[in-house]
Image (cartoon, rainbow, N blue to C red; front, top):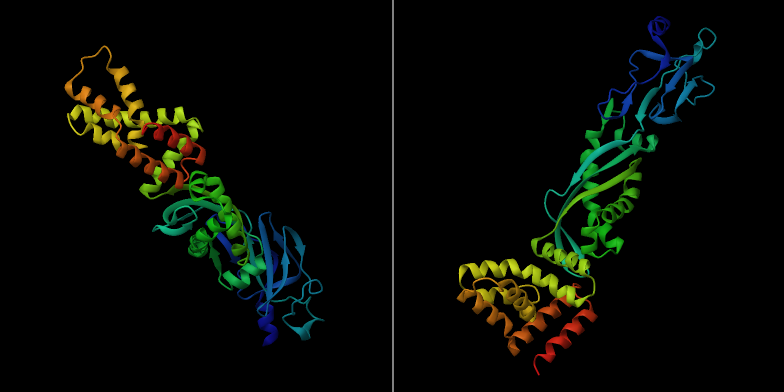
Length: 348
């Protein structure tokens, strides 16, 4: 009876896998009621690897190429040990194929803002998203740790785990990079490099390799976005205090003009902008030049007079605001000292 059962079995001459393009990472060759003929061929294509598993243990790993399978070259057991004189020793073994090509455009993101620590701003909440690409690099490890004996294992099956790894390592990556938060937020390539360095060893534990990582967007809290905008503006004018004052004046004029059109609250609006009333004289000069040749309304004349007059209390308040800008790194110590000396002269 055992002999008849053996004869009914189908012997496999060629073992191969053609991917279906559905994101499959691991696929088990169907072996039901079939055995591998001694001397059969295993065809492993480029971007694939295959492993033989016998009695629950990985027997061998095969890379791309055509491999002749014999009981002498494979550490597996023959199906019928006592019939080796009658048959050419067919053997039973599970065969798993793995796709080693890049799995591109995998999405990651922060569903909720995450909190990170920064040396300049303390606790900061941000949101970010991007994409990444990975591949199976160690099929034996991936089989034993992740895919196991399943018939198929796809990208979708591992997606949640990989997204979780990205989110778990964002804070650590930023801290380990040593890059100031504002610089990191404005340089997404540095952000991506920091994430890649942190995630590489974590994905290797799963038998995977991170091939690329991109950060497509970083959303900052509104107050930090304003500081970042100011820092970018200062970067455009450099250390020239004259250009700095021109920059601040340009920022102030639209709001000042809006106040003038309303007929009230003009001086107060101007005082609250940028570096405050320390820029009053420059703003007044710009406004006066713009008013020449035009009809001066009472509101415009009052605005010029208000911003051109500096009081000691206004100067002290402006110095305090400039001190805050220095503490946040927007003004350098040299810029602050130069402006401080200029304002103190006005108190004499």
